Image (cartoon, rainbow, N blue to C red; front, side):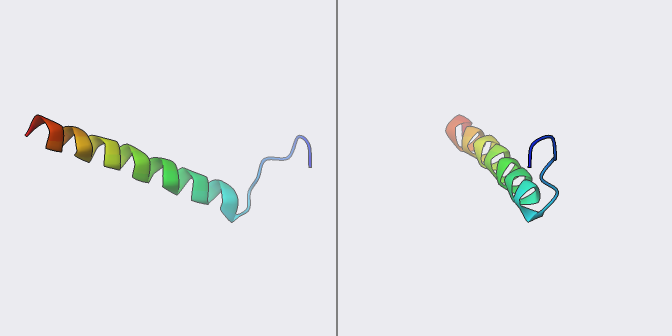
Length: 34
């Protein structure tokens, strides 16, 4: 499906995963600083 943005649950899953990774990184930074 060229030229068609993935509107199914896949794009949402990727977005949620990216957000979780960002949160994990921020938490890790806090732990490293502490």
